[in-house]
Length: 194
Image 1 (cartoon, rainbow, N blue to C red):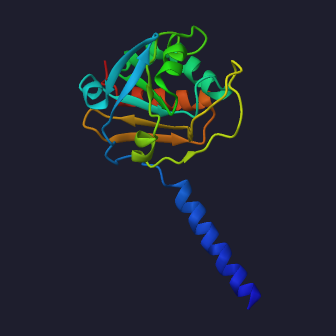
Image 2 (image 1 turned 90 degrees about the vertical axis):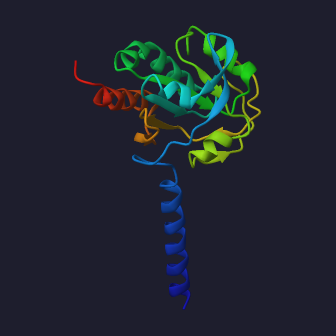
Image 3 (image 1 turned 135 degrees about the vertical axis):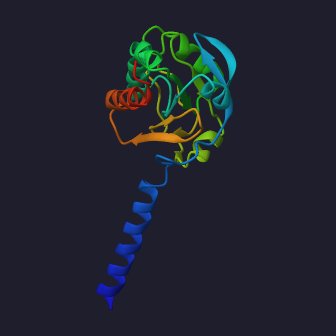
């Protein structure tokens, strides 16, 4: 009896963990449209996914928090490769639960976004939840500038959205650099032959 109960509980746990691991949206799903306050090179604007898709594919990448190790590296890598995304006709938007003041600084920081990629503020996690991403409370910690992180953290995931509003590719569980490389490869596959 104990073995049967333990086996049943293990199967339930496995089922729940499998469901959670595959909860995010995937290729061919409709990308939830969103508008959000965003920052580019220290200036605030309203980002609209629908408007951005009129110009070509959009890489929507979610990251836990500005001014943290992996997110700094990912933003820097997207910024240094931004011209390659543009050459493939794609634009980029980073999304986190950071407030807009923090993102204004991050977007202009020459070591990270360097004024080349915009980042959107999703303070309540509404956009992350629409993309079926988990949002967790931040453990008590400080960022790389020594300031406390006082917001929730969305899991690192990237979606390549085509102009018709569908997800062409979705990535999670990758290193920040590999995440950028996979997103670039996906938009290059979408680019018309020249």
